[in-house]
Length: 354
Ligand code: SAH
Image (cartoon, rainbow, N blue to C red):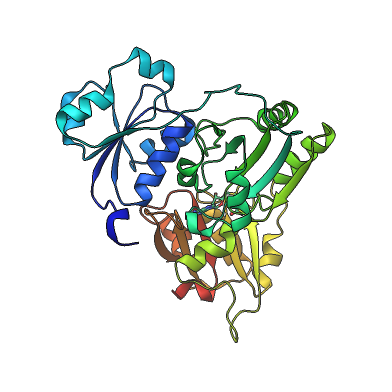
């Protein structure tokens, strides 16, 4: 993580709001750059980065001070927008700023694939590109089209050959999302067109990833489908914060649960009272807003007020941070300051470690 590869604090401009721009933006952020994106329309995952204040947004590529104040310019607009808009490379060159163009491929509905058509679900790990498996990376390189989620290591997509089409189907809590049926339909349609499809997901595809539904949709359509396991955030995100989910002598197991539905919500099928008594570490995914209610249920079931709780946000990303609290404080004071999704929450004695 040293040397010319790093761009710490370097202001970078990325023009374009599509999936290719997303990949560039994430890759630049991983290298430490301070990124401004220039586009009128953004794919959901890019919009989410802007909404969370992690990426700035400029309105117009012609704003001369935007180009002049950058130290790096990337033009990731579609060929159509590039043709209709100003010549960004020229503007950058005039301002003495290094600039390059990214191939935005066919921009949808692309070419017929060379093979028989197939789908592979690749678990991308928690977000750090280094935590994707070698097999997963090989699948990405061999793909005709990559259908990606927001929590996958999308920066890696900037390394793919120019002909690879990238489709962003990010699902953002309480934000824009692509319905699951539509994602299934995209996978089947692309594979039937003879293309090699990678479904790129965060963590592991079968851990709250709706991966099995996608496998079933492919099977029902007669499309060959395989799965490459990924490093799940349920274990790796705590670990990146230094927290072991088990620890010899203190805790002999862990339980990963979804906090999407609060304990009192009829949709919740988790027996929280039983969980409180298991003596294992509790790892909650998809549950920030519901944490106070989860804490109340665990306390009522006999867990101690002082039980440590650690919430690790953006694990494996440059913006990663951890906040710590206790079950008692979650109930009496509510959510800790600054706690926002995505986060993995660890409840139990190990949450005091790290
Ligand atoms: N299939 C994924 C989980 C999908 S559910 C996996 O195996 O990891 C999405 C939830 O995962 C988020 O709400 C959050 O709780 C967790 N998550 C995934 N990536 C994360 C990250 N980098 N940092 C923090 N939490 C993450």
